[in-house]
Length: 317
Image 1 (cartoon, rainbow, N blue to C red):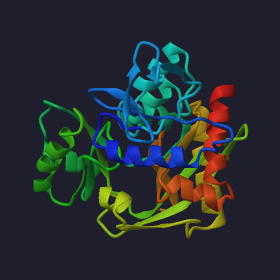
Image 2: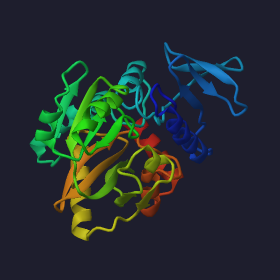
Image 3: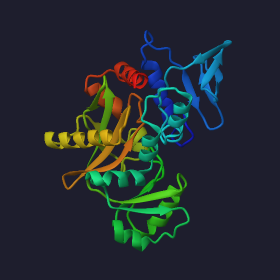
Image 4: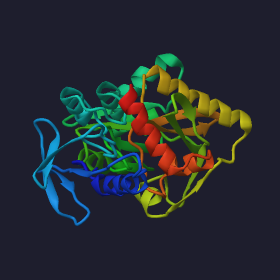
């Protein structure tokens, strides 16, 4: 848990929920904080014990602890963009999220859209900017229209995102996004119902969870809406059976085609009655209030079983 990005506090919450719900008759869990300056295990009395980065072990009370598996709850870098996955692969420790290539690909919104388009996945109209590029607001509006969304390309939890309604707002919004990343994606506004679909490998099978409808009190599903109660998350979503089946099948297809593992949560907007893909999260929030745990509970899967299945899948694959 933890990480190097603006999302580290959210990750700590997710990690603590997993730690609390793991079956102690089966597992002996440790809370590992991966922070920019140091990696350490936090004992129940809050004593920190440094991780040996050469082999990902820790020494506690004179005993060297060797881990059998890592439950990855890091949102953002290095746990969601492939760095941690690659490191753990090198030191030979299984982990519960997807592989390093899939993590790097899905964390890059621009690259992911390019990979999914040949499969017929519908998306918003988009425009790409890199740091140092000229910001031509007229050209951007001609391509994507107004209103539009300006997003940091590689960031999560709605950091670095602005909804832009006028030509004059584009340049300031781009500056906000560049605070989070050196690449920006600008997307056309999609008017419609927003939904989130969890897909997991559960007891050896790929399973799409009940669909959640997201109704934000704010302009869009931003940080406040996600984490500070400024939204309604309705599971199951108030959409037809046909729409539910279609968006679940698309989510499972994305999971399969990208050769994903672990938990994913894909976001869509039903624009003109068709699901348009927004993004996929490969280490989704796992606090009690987070969407994927809510969906699992609706599907009759307890948090203990959900988290335990993730570990068993990781160590057996």
